[in-house]
Length: 164
Length: 164
Length: 164
Image (tube, rainbow over all chains, first blue to last red; front, side):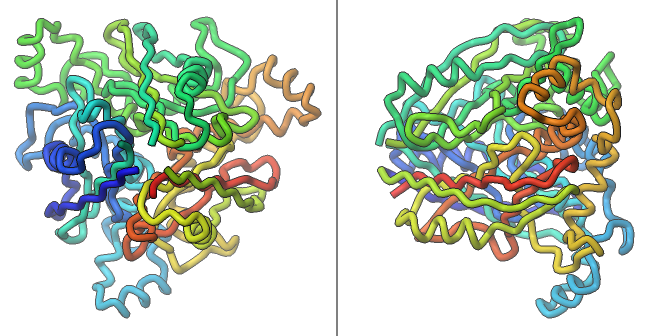
């Protein structure tokens, strides 16, 4: 059975960022040779998520689509942005020592909000592939979300397809 | 490798609706000929979700199972029902123009709450299939949820199975 | 096409419990013989979830990792622990009668919070398998979460893999 694995990267900013990766995923599917099966778009990063939503058309001054900003606003009320240590229980002292051993600044661990938002929204989307096309409906777009606000980073998106 | 794709439709109402689609999914599996693999129940609609939960037995005056109503009540505190424009940032002016080009009333775009609830709960469920049976446990039922409250619509549910 | 199905069990406590099951899932993959494909870690229990997150290193007095306790704290504000009947609409009278028919105490049904938390966080994780390895990234660990606080129970975790 054919299995296809593709990766590509995006560049995040120091605020919640949402990248429309529909075209890159479509290209991963087209080059896989798989016509029917299940496609998984997956984030291996523990502060990121993969979402499917409609394009919002309008953006705010930061370039964030309005629907995604509404999502951030709702999440902010449930899981507020971590401003300083002690706001959440994580990171604790052992975690900070371990991070220092990896040459990470203590402040880089102040992303508990991003970890929790990633858990709540999930890390992947499974999409049916039929006759070579993803079943996204008329309006569905695939977004890679990075909720980490402590540093800008290059992030890896994985596209795994099984089928025939 | 066998891949099966089936669809069926449900009719939503102008309130959050939850359809127990376990039997339809079971029939999709039975007619697929696949005995072992992964089955994905998927919504292509950006204001809908697919859930697995136990049947609540009791319903409210609207016919909604009580557990699902408790879910709506919790979501209402996080993502309140959109009552009028300006409550959320989405839909913005470009989105309304684009919708008008599709002959949609502006009020039909006042479903931001439904988009956000769909993102939070997810759009699909992946279920192991073993010896021809879905592993739902003693109480698991599959629900298709439509959170869009601005108009009643026919909705498509997709069942994709890969395996052998 | 190879399909692999493995199960193992964990023992929950009468509080939200999080088990790091990465090693058991890894062993399920190693014994499957599958080198490339999609692996699903799945809970068949309607009050449980499967999460991927980084290890928190530190734990609280109960032994709960701090990041997971932060998650419980956030969920508590959205879906408070059910303390007594009537706090949520579920369980209703028919549900209690049905539970009694299964020799269940009425108080065992006072786990509506756990059902809702399971729905919000989801019941499974789909993970790409490449060259025999799960793509978990540097920090990803797999957790089985049991949110049911009314009784301690043995829980089944399922690992389903399709690929080649």
